[in-house]
Image (tube, rainbow, N blue to C red; front, side, top):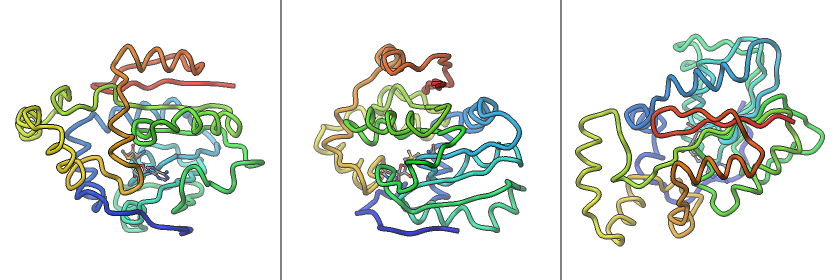
Length: 234
Ligand SMILES: C[S@@+](CC[C@H](N)C(=O)[O-])C[C@H]1O[C@@H](n2cnc3c(N)ncnc32)[C@H](O)[C@@H]1O
C-alpha cells in the first residue's frame, strides 16, 4: 500500500525510472554486498524496520521474512517499482510491507511509533545541511540506526565498477562547474527534492565521514567500495 501526500519537482533521468536507477547504482556501488550487509546487521526474526528513504526498495531483497518493513520516499516512480509483480519475481516475502510517499522530515508517525531499526542509506549527502536533524529524529524513535553513505561523490573520484561509467566519469572531470550543474540536473543526482546549491556543499571525504560518524555516536564502521556503513545503538 502506498500512502501519498505530495510529489517532487523536476527529477533527473536517473530519478525518473526505478529500473534505470537500479541499473546505474549497481554499476557505481556494490549494491548486493551493501544491502546484504545491512540486512545482516538488522538481523533475523520479527523486527520493525523503517527505511528512510527506501528508493526502489532494494533492501527488501535481503531481509528476513519475519520483518515488518516500512519504506518512506517522495519519488512515486521508485515506490511504484515495488509492486506485487516485482516482489513475486524477487521472491520477497516479508511479514508486512507499508510504503509512504512522504517527506522523510514530515513522517507523521515519528512519535510513539518505535522502530527496532532505522536504515538511512545514501541520503545524508542529498539533504545537507539537515542530515544531523534526520539522525537526531531517528535516534528518538529507534533502538538501532544503520547509515550507509558514499564518501566520495565527485565524478572524478568515483571508482565505478563498470567500464562505460568509468569512461563517462573520466570525461566528467573536465566539465566546468556550470556545465556539471546542468548534467546533474538532467542526468545525475537531481532527486527533484533537494537543490544542487545545497547538495554540492556536502564535502565529507573518507576521513571526514568517519569523523562525522564518531561525533554522532556511530561506530563499527565498515567500508564497501566507495561507501561506509556505520551503526548506532541506544
Ligand atoms: C540516492 S537515493 C537512495 C534510496 C535508497 N535508500 C537506496 O539506497 O537505494 C535518495 C532517495 O532519497 C529520496 N529523498 C530525498 N530527499 C527526500 C525527502 N526529503 N523525503 C523523502 N524522500 C527523499 C529521493 O527520492 C531518492 O529516492
